[in-house]
Length: 66
Image 1: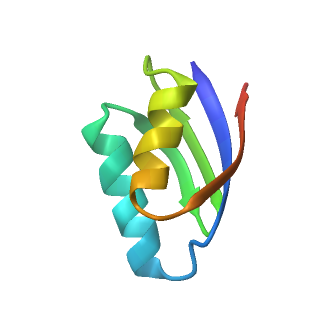
Image 2: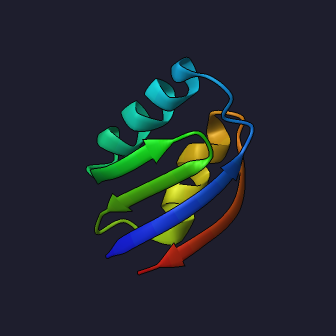
């Protein structure tokens, strides 16, 4: 499933690296990780993606399946 995720709080390249690492650890294929915009393809659930991002201290505003 492909997901477009909108977050709040990602303000620097270090934030992008942290989120990219977390998504990779979940086995997600990265389509895009930019400030507050993430696109991944994964078999993981929306809840798992949301939890991984929120554990890093970022707010998840929306997760949309594409």
